[in-house]
Image 1: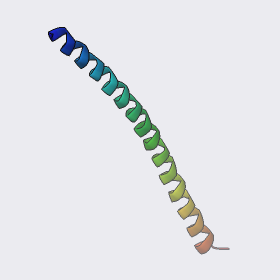
Image 2 (image 1 turned 90 degrees about the vertical axis):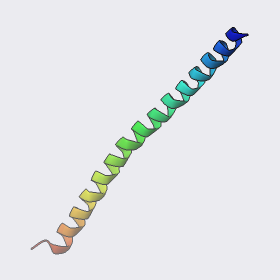
Image 3 (image 1 turned 180 degrees about the horizontal axis):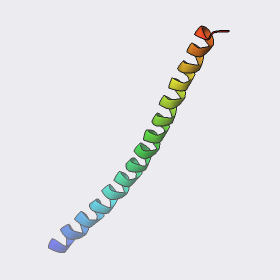
Length: 56
């Protein structure tokens, strides 16, 4: 009877670990995309400001 619970616990641990690994991959990609987009937006803002107020 105890072996039944051990196998159930092992099965649940493997399922949760694979789910956590997938979420970790998504958040890593999200973090790098977020950093990329922030840098892109800041660069775009500086470019627009330099075009508006740039001296000729």
